[in-house]
Image (cartoon, rainbow, N blue to C red; front, side):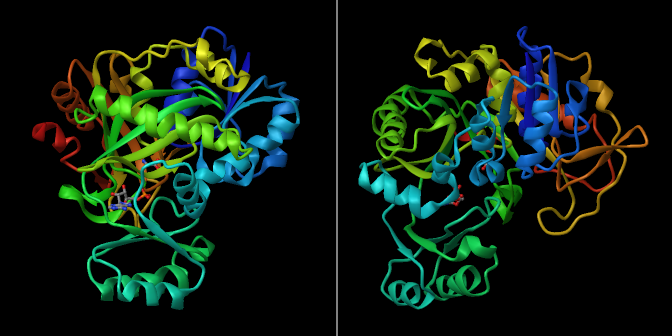
Length: 423
Ligand code: AMP
Ligand code: GLY
């Protein structure tokens, strides 16, 4: 079959690598793809948001199966455009992707269906938010309602910080129209775990757990980023917690979406906090995480196309989802200055070192080919993933492999997986 992948980052590279392994697949297209994805796929320079062009390309090439991976096109209804044209497509429709695209929607859903999460209030009006904050307990969390590249969340320790936060989100519109509404949420404490789940709208199957590192600097300092590294599995996500989450979070969420007439097919990403009062939902995403995909997908035993087809066809109950009994760590190589300002266009060396090495991956996030040479083309450049028998081995392998790759202004965190030492 012919498969088209919409997206062009490290997550899409990991997905493409898995799709390329499927014996069912003869041809892969990627829009827009990147220099790493180009190893397996024919890349076509169409924006992930240009639904019309994507559809006419898919029709022209007689694509059988489409995977829409990033949040923006899912929120904008790009999966709907393919589905309505009769092309089998993995990824939720717009009316279900709202679970990520509006925090107010997801908070209301959790409240209505008793899914554990932080207490909250929603505001459309800055004055009302400011009045509420005067008597609210600190610290408190402010969240822009809409999509903000994972950056629209402010944790405020004092009333002054909270007031400045309201100004940033609702008045100065630092996150654009995402800040027209704002959720004010109770501050929770605990370990964070990401659990990505496949769903066909009725059945939900959790994948192995992972943990992201969102801040730019070592020891969780600096600005929030798209993700500087991940490890999988989380040693803190016990079988008991997994059972609790299945019963109280994953299945109830899928049932709630169905009851609301918003059947969710695709990957439901549950960002959880393991609080002293049990696991609670921090956020939902309507897609694979990036760089969670880079540690979860290489550990999956199943043919990814079998699983994705089952999600589309409503037969996920027949899939025995299995992961290797090993571990993976991904360390993101970024451009110094990310997430604020950074230079691009530097040649990248050392990528050939990964060619013949099992268990090591260089998943391209922001790269492109320039005159036959792979060059940096983004803030996050390459996610170095390594497998290992356990987390300690995987981490040592990943950090060793970060030395193989070089480019000007290379930057990385040196403490990815530090929680492994605290288990
Ligand atoms: P989100 O995009 O909603 O996952 O938020 C980004 C990050 O902010 C999370 O990964 C947490 O580290 C933090 N965060 C979000 N909500 C809360 C909360 N209610 N209490 C404490 N930390 C939070
Ligand atoms: N790594 C977090 C995300 O993909 O949203």
